[in-house]
Image 1 (cartoon, rainbow, N blue to C red):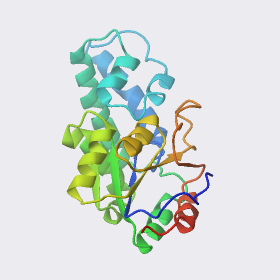
Image 2 (spheres, one colour; image 1 turned 135 degrees about the vertical axis):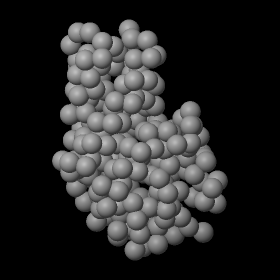
Image 3 (tube, rainbow, N blue to C red; image 1 turned 180 degrees about the horizontal axis):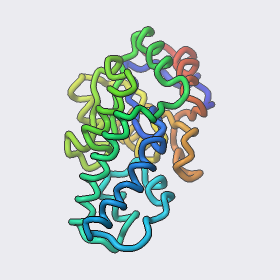
Image 4 (cartoon, one colour; image 1 turned 135 degrees about the horizontal axis):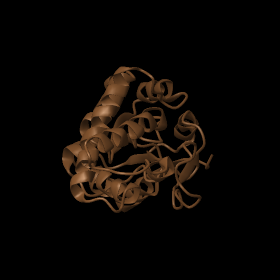
Length: 231
């Protein structure tokens, strides 16, 4: 875990969802295979399902970019149908309650809120997916807002974080996430970036430039407690 001596306490923490709060593969992989079964049934895709490493390695990107990596030879109509099917399968999976948050996520969020930290989510996912996860796992009530690229049609996490901060009149936040897009969002908005290195989806340079890196979610508490009070 990175040292917190150079950090100052934030007004709010803004969390990525996939790979940060939510153990994405518990929902995504079953849905992923179901999507390609349906695409084949509908005559929109032929051949074997692409390796799951393609989609796991693309988490954190916008869906339109993910499908370009997963099935680069298919046209946009197939990609958009895959969007619809993936959301359908994921919402179904959430209702079946076979999905998981990372260890200590709910408890840590409760403790951060008790310390007076405002909590938000900023995700490049679809609106109903992001909100569905929060509702299914009982953390929605802890959050001051769930911001998604799907709802606000932002082109990057940088833009999404800027929108969130502007709407809630925030000038000092910690952006917490597992991908380079989260670090970029924090730094380009002049904020602190906390990298999460426990999901295993990114490469070794994924969190380069983060102000601190945690290897379990509950380490946020000690980072916060050790941080200097904001002036």
